[in-house]
Image 1 (spheres, rainbow over the protein chains, first blue to last red):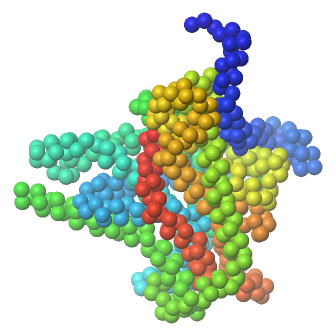
Image 2: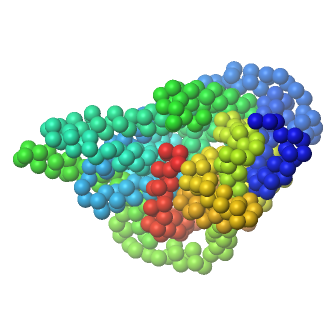
Image 3: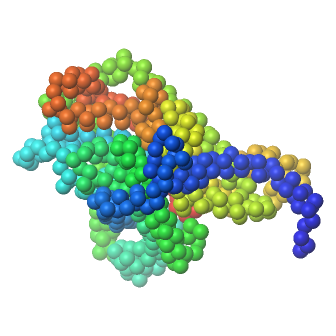
Length: 310
Length: 299
């Protein structure tokens, strides 16, 4: 093909001009919402002084990072973020795949539809509302657990919002409750996509339900499982801010077990005004997150090119 | 064959019991919310929140009705933000996704990469906050509820692009062009009408995101007149928490405790906040499930 001459190139650009015009609002939005903040990462290297403005503030090199990593905070928030996410990934996987398999086995289609609708319900509501549900259960003087369940078991009331030891379990439970329904639908879709002939053949060969699940269903949805899991691992440095902020109600006595990178960055910015440290933590999260996304995508690509993000 | 029957029945039985327990766990908290909102205040103080209230009362809802200005305004703001946000979002997402779905568009790959890169790397909360408050001065404005983070994201753009690429035959576009339709005309009268499934899916995701959003309100809004429903709920909750952890703090605390909404009233506002979603859910459930599936398998 010949290289188009200048006027010809101008002509093509002109025919496509309306299409480029369409992209403008979207491109502009990404510029403002996504690209400008990337330049804002310089804040992590500055001693922010509002009278001088952000760009005019003094450079401090890696001081902010030094403070962050010398404090006990860095280890705590990294540990919490990673451990919670690791538990979430495993538990979500087990519950979602398990429920999806059961849903697929249910012969009464009407009831199956009903279960499916109901397990998705928690996914639809905001974390603020979840925190109210939690409060109705856990509140010290009016909570359902303290007033109805624990007395029935002959146990003492518990000040849930002041007792860190219960929270890893509570948060895990809430997270699974809210999110597993979504994953379950994803896996159910994958299971429904499996060719029925495999099962018919297996039934003829006398395979039990359990054997069918182990040697047909699970292997055939493994690519989806691996993909979803790797995507979650790629985001292991990020956590659901609402879960860790709303559900424990920002209670100070629980910070040891509820503080994750996202809540730390938020509190640094909004409550403590420690902008330097907060943006250093944010940048640490973005950079490690970036590497992890690239890595997990690389692995997905190795396994199944189709499923890779890029 | 008898064995097979027993096995199969055992599976049905086990399946139903496990799913029933799980479904109950998903629904019961909502039920507790509902019963609490219609429980008499003194009963709650005595017995706590309960599924079977000793004494029934609609006082909380009457109070809600009388004191409705703040709540109504918040409701209005939430509805406005959801409708406008979802509409704008669908418009700019599809307008960006369509051109990059066209294989003949020059510089289409760099454009796609520009969108895609935003999914890999981000500036994080602190710089984003400064961009929207310092550069664009959005603090305490409705724009702050609409624009930051929620309006459009790379993932939706790529999802839509894949849909356009796989479901709209290039021949249709070609023949429209032959008939003299311009690019914009083709987009509006051919591409969009063919794309209802993806528009419904992304529209639903966006509507839920806007309806449930409390984070933008939390960081950008300090003026209570601009609170959305979620922000009012959030504010009430953090006041309760503040007072209960500082309960020893004295008379002043208990004085403001008096002005706090009562235990049943709190639950009544939440009920009013979730009901639209619960009512609409059966109607959009089909699309929603389809949407999740599309999202999972990338079109």
